[in-house]
Amino acid sequence: MITDKKIFSMLSLCQKAGKIFSGEFMCEKSIKSKEALFVIVALDASENTKKKFKELCNSSQIPLYLWGTKEELGRSIGKDDRASLAIRDPHFAKKMEQLLQDILGS
Image (cartoon, rainbow, N blue to C red; front, side):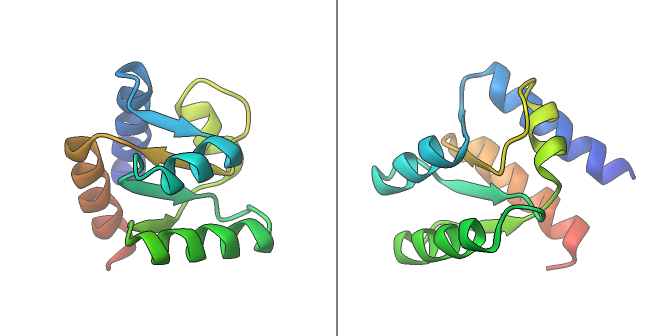
C-alpha cells in the first residue's frame, strides 16, 4: 500500500535526521523527559508494553498510535525489531500523525 511506504519512508528520514528514539527504554525516557512528541507502538508488542505506553502518553498528552509490527518498525529505521518509536521533531511528528490518520481513518 502506498501510504504504508510513505510511513516507512518518513520513519527512515526521521532516523537519518536523528529525530527518533527507538526501543522501550529510550521511548519511555523520552516521554518522561517531555522530548517525545509522537509515539508509535507495534501492534505485536506485548499487552503490558501497549498498556504502559498508553498510560505514559495519556498522562503526558502525547499522540500514540498502534501501527505496524516490531519487525517493520525496526527495519524502517535500519535496526532490529523495535516495539516502540518516539519522534522528537515537531514537523516529523505532525506529518506522521497525518499519514497515520489517513491510513487508519481516524
